[in-house]
Length: 334
Image (cartoon, rainbow, N blue to C red; front, side, top):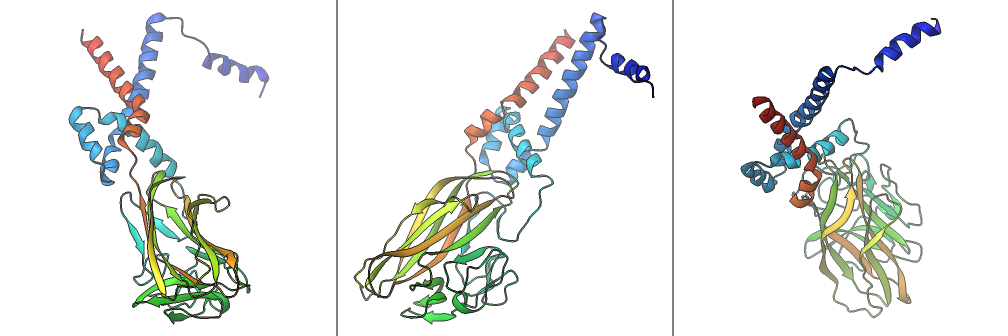
């Protein structure tokens, strides 16, 4: 093709129409097309917001301002489209719905029935934990990995009633008939070490706030103080403390004692299909000799619904589009 053959249509494409009437009509057409696209997209979004149980949608509809919230939700759904699930994990698929892990009832992607201390695998059999959601590190025979298999040795020490074991590793402890995930630290196990729970956001929107809680079990039966801290991360690299705990060096002889630890509206931004990581971290602190036993149970996770005020701000431009359309309609009628 000759260069001149290519230049001709290009210059025509960028030529400006000098007819004022046609130019104004063209601008109106472009504005109408843009506004129509915005508003038509908005029309399908309020139902999604209502599906998540946001009472604020009903308020906006009654006051004629529902368009204000639509583009924000549209953007979130758009970002979600085409994304894929890389792992099973614990899936949080709805706002304001609490998921609880009690290590007795099956939770998809987390555990298969009552935990019996038989380890971690991505296809858990009865009594096992799902390694797509769980990882344990700091064991003398190696760390487990997300999606890996650790069904022997330190990662699978079986069951024990009321504690008092001496072999280090991961146990299904029971106390007063209640089963929970536990660990016996020794010099070569879990000092330091951690349990990590991986949680995937599949709500279709970004989650910015979480309500979290768990029951911490401690059997302070030895003369050494140990840390058992709780932290979170959104990248599994940098962790931020939620709660810190250290057992006393002096044993108390009370057996396993439980305490509920909770945090409301934890700020942690997780994009749709992204992950939140909860980690329980152990290490020696003071004293000498053998170490106390620790456990976790009744882990509760809730994705918090965004505040309506933030949605209103982000929906501002959709309201402007509606106002412009109405103004043009009134101008045409006159």
